[in-house]
Length: 94
Image (cartoon, rainbow, N blue to C red; front, side, top):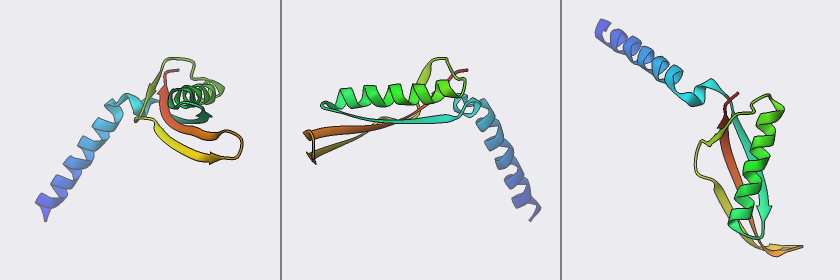
């Protein structure tokens, strides 16, 4: 039983060190979303939206994607017909 407790404590300490060492833990994650007639326009708009959110919280540094952009395509938009929507998550330096 002591061995299991010791392993649990060691695993918890290792997780805490890994979390403290990761750059993403230093600043919050900001989300952005947009739409566009091309996938790239939608992604660029989503990145701008996420940067604006970060800047409103005082993070004016370089932004890095947390994961690849999520892109959705629709053919039934009531105004444009064929349209792309994108969502991104970024972390930005202060």
